[in-house]
Amino acid sequence: MWFGVAVGTVALVIFIYKYVFSGSGPNPFEKDSREPLKKMVFDKKEKNKVLKQGFVASKVPDNLDAVVVGSGIGGLGLAVLLAKVGKKVLVLEQHDRAGGCCHTFTEKGFEFDVGIHYIGEMQAHTPLRCIVDQMTDGQLQWSPLDNPFDHVVLGPPEKRRRYPIYSGRTRFPEELKKCFPGEEKAIDEYVKLVEKTGKGVWFLGFLKLCPVPLAQFLVHTGLVQRLSSFFRMASRSLTDVVNGLTENKDLRAVFTYIFGTYGNLPKDSSFAMHSLIVTHYLNGAWYPKGGASEIAYHMIPIIEKAGGAVLVRAPVNRILFNEAKEACGVSVMKGQEEIHIHAPIVVSNAGIFNTYQKLLPKELQATPGVQKQLSMMKNGEGGLSIFIGLTGTKEELGLKADNYWIFAENNFNELMENYLKGKREESARQVPLLFVASPSAKDSTWEDRSPVGKSTLSVVTFAKYEWFEQWKDGKVKNRGADYQELKQAFIDSVLQVVMDVFPKISRDKVEYIDAGTPITNAHYLGCPRGEFYGADHGIARFSPELNATVRAQTPLKNLYLTGQDVMLCGFAGALAGALSCGSVILNRNLHLDAIALAKKNKSADARLKGE
Ligand SMILES: Cc1cc2nc3c(=O)[nH]c(=O)nc-3n(C[C@H](O)[C@H](O)[C@H](O)COP(=O)(O)OP(=O)(O)OC[C@H]3O[C@@H](n4cnc5c(N)ncnc54)[C@H](O)[C@@H]3O)c2cc1C
Ligand SMILES: *[C@@H]1O[C@H](CO)[C@@H](O)[C@H](O)[C@H]1NC(C)=O
Ligand SMILES: CC(=O)N[C@H]1CO[C@H](CO)[C@@H](O)[C@@H]1O
Image (cartoon, rainbow, N blue to C red; front, side, top):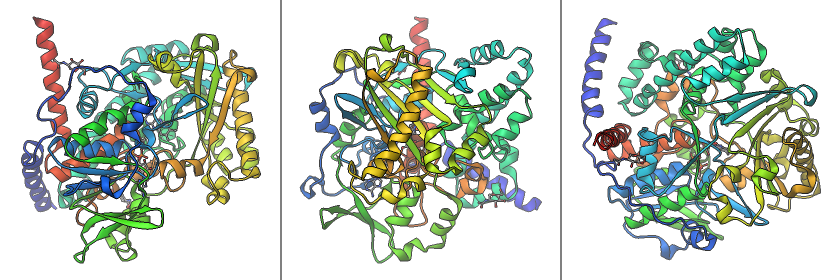
């Protein structure tokens, strides 16, 4: 045992030397690449020239350094990292526009975004802000949400309780204490636990980048839990931790409401995942100025500048392997024809299930390493979105730059379990969890880029894939009357709650309303079971072993994973997946490079202030 520990310690020292303090590959964050702000482009036709470049074989650059399947933030992010060190990368997207969860669409003149409502840690000098600045050459700007940024609404219409959630390390607990007198101790303890657990997340990145034998050593000796507060709390459920802090049912609910951002019931959620999200928003929340499509719009030119391309309507139907079983390219379906594209590196942003179960040849799917990873992950819960276009300005409709989390009661576990286990027609009539937000009210440029006097509202909740599965092979926008009827049942009950919580919204203000079901998500977002956040984020996802095993480097040579299944879900999580993937491909720790650049920026600002 002690011999093992000694060997392990030596390995750790070597690791720290080799991977943490140095790195032999080129550094995409070497120099600050931000450029002076250009004028924002609102013209959709202009933007589509970048976002909607259709695939044809003649547009594929030759001598590619890498090909990426999927144009979510994980795919584009990785491509930009490689482009910044001069590599020629092709990104292929199955949908008709780039962006994945960051794409937007327009119906009846209303622009809606799909998967970006609020992002934390965008204040100056954070590594995340620095990474995003570099990946968009400083062109992507952020509108802060109001403070309070979230509102938790609990209970039935006649007895609704509203709790505003403020950001700010001191303001967050202070405001909670005003709502829950007598619970000061529980609130302080909660914040302390959340912060301590969240801070230990660096170890997650470490486990994914260090050599596999070292990772296994750390996992099997239990050193992982000793060294990292993150993993110490990872096996405890959110319900378990929170119930230990207070008896107050509403406070328990307010401590846990944000589970909707990763999709597991509090009793199945890892306290570690929860802590990450809470700390993510502790210093504020932001929305991309100009809407979510700005993200891809400012990343694609960087990929192109290095000779690469981002092409849409390019569904990859399989990954190509040579005789030595090394990935060597992909095949794209163009109508009935397969077009082969070769590259020495293949990166998949399509998620672990699509990649391993749909894109690998059968015999490689059976590789023990691949099977081991698949056995450790499961699909996340399906999602349902309702998009509402309204007549009226934000003032007229009482909409602000914030989010509402509306629950039928404070017993989230039973509430959600009954809903998800229920008969779909009955569940549709009583949706117990709604996330409601107005993207138009969050964006300071909305009035400049949209018809006058219009607003949008997005509603998000969960729904079983199985409820809709029978229609999955139907034609989009024409799946039949019974499918429409089920959708309408969800729309009607949800709209009722929305009008109740937002009294200035009435039926006659609704100009456009439609629902996207799990099968809609599967179609546009390419997720296999309509899941919002990729693979499930329950407690099992945070076992140290899984974290050490599921990595950017797959068991197959030259095939890598990027995006939310590598690290965690969310804009920041998927981007962290891209950084991990880039670190492996470029053979240097890009997380540390980004932190170094953020520090440089901070000290430069401090110098400027001092002058
Ligand atoms: C409704 C909703 C709300 C959300 N709200 C927030 C939020 O407020 N804040 C936040 O931080 N996060 C939020 N998220 C989560 C966040 O958007 C995602 O976790 C993140 O964007 C995922 O990025 P990704 O690159 O891993 O995957 P994706 O964005 O899903 O990208 C994967 C891409 O791969 C493509 N693809 C799949 N298969 C193929 C194939 N065979 N060939 C070619 N292309 C393929 C898909 O079409 C897709 O474009 C939300 C998500 C949803 C759905
Ligand atoms: C540091 O980063 C912030 C946020 O992007 C930016 O506003 C500021 O100009 C940067 N400072 C310097 C000195 O580059
Ligand atoms: C799914 C899985 O393999 N889980 C393992 C995670 O790691 C712990 C030890 O840290 C094992 O006990 C689990 O079986």
